[in-house]
Image 1 (spheres, rainbow, N blue to C red):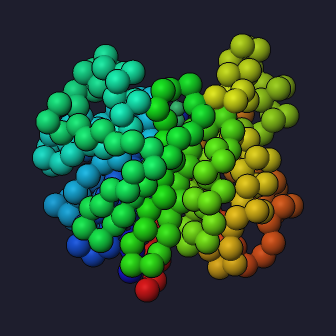
Image 2 (cartoon, rainbow, N blue to C red):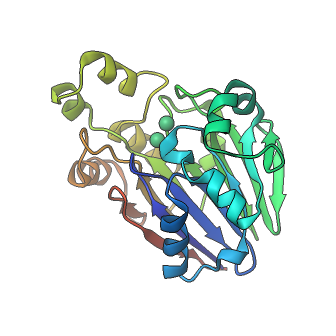
Length: 258
Ligand SMILES: [Zn+2]
Ligand SMILES: [Zn+2]
C-alpha cells in the first residue's frame, strides 16, 4: 500500500509525500521545515522514513524549505542537471549543499527503496523544470505542475496511472477579467507559464482511467476558485474517476491499495 499526502499546494507552498510503509519520497518542499514535519506527523508518516526530495523546479513555492529539510534529515535533493547548471545562485540562496545535491538527466531512471522515479521536462519560466512518473509495486503515479503546455512525454507518463496530480492553475475568463497587469496575464497563460482549468480537464479526459484518483493542484488564489475547477472537470470527465480539488494551503491524504 502507498500512503500519499498533498502536504500543501498553491503559491503558499507545494509539497507531496509518498510512503510505502518503509520509505518516503518527497516531491518539492515549499513549506517551512516545521510546517512540513508537523503535517507529515499529523498523517502518521514517520520523519525518519523520508529518504529523498525530488524537485520539479526552483521557484520558491516549491523549494523554500528544501535546504533546511535536507540538512535536518540528512537526505539528498534530486534536481535536473539543467536546473543545477542554470541556477547556482538560487541553490546557494536556499542553502542546498553540494554534497546533498544529486543532478539527474530527464528520462533517467532513479530508485529509492522500492520506488522507481523518472523525471521529464515541463515548459515553465524556470530552466530545467520537470514532471514526475513514480512507480512502486506495479502502481503508477503521475505528478505534473507549473507548465505552460502539455509536454509530449506527459501523454505516456499519465497513461494508466493510478493517481494523477495535475496543475489546474487558472480560469481563463477570470484571469482575463482579473486584476493582474496584461504582462503578468500573458506570462501565466503563455507557453512557459501555468495550465488552465480547461487544459487540465482536457488532459484528464484523455488519460484518467476508470477508478483512478485525480488531485487538482496549484490553484491560483486570484484567478481561480475550487467551484470553477469543479464545473470544468464535471463538464468534461466521465463518472468513475475520483477527483479531489486541492484548496490552497490545505493537506489531503490518500492511499493506493495493493
Ligand atoms: Zn513555478
Ligand atoms: Zn508554483
